Amino acid sequence: MRSVLVSILLAASLTGCATVSMVASEATVETELTAAESSLRKVSDAYTDLAERKLWIEKSTGLLGFARVLMDGASDADASSEGTYLKLVTTEAPVGTDQITFVKSDIESAAHGLDVATMEVQKLFGAGLTAKALRADLLSYESALVTAKKARRTFVTTLSDLDVEEVNSASYALTELDVSIDKARDAADKLADYAADRKLEESLS
Image (tube, rainbow, N blue to C red; front, side, top):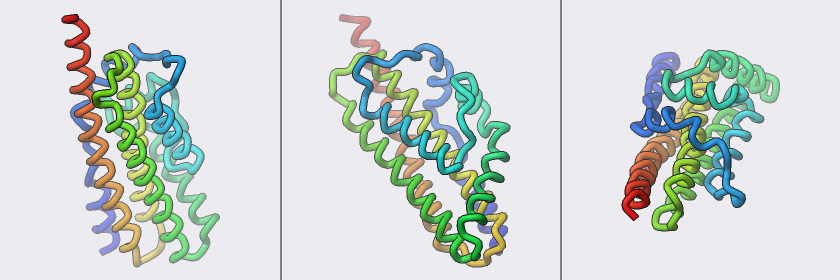
């Protein structure tokens, strides 16, 4: 029963959003940041840094690696990150029930961090930013979204590998993370549309 539940959870919410193809094609456009780095970029970058430090995901391989993940899905390093995180969980929490609590806490942190980034997105609409600045913000936010989806994969795989029968509390936390990912996907699409509108306005002015 547990393996069936985990398989269902793994299959859910791993599809890409409509924005990623556009962002991947422009991944090399915005490599420099403005002097005053936006709050969204700071939050998004901090989110990915946290995920790397807590071993939810493998350390980034750079811009080209990120673009490949956007276009192709999970990277070759995903299996490595999942195995490393599993070792961390079993080391920090040797008892089965404590392991579930450990993973559940990390899932909740992943959801909360993504929600914070999504709230920052809402501040950009009507703020008068240029299309160039908005595209840079979008790229960072998309990176955070990809991080959240990769982290989710790590959480689900780790739960399936733990020798614990009761995973309901962690499963509920995963559902909440799915909600956060869906909201972020929608926000990214809206931000992409807004950036496109701003670019059109600038071309006509």
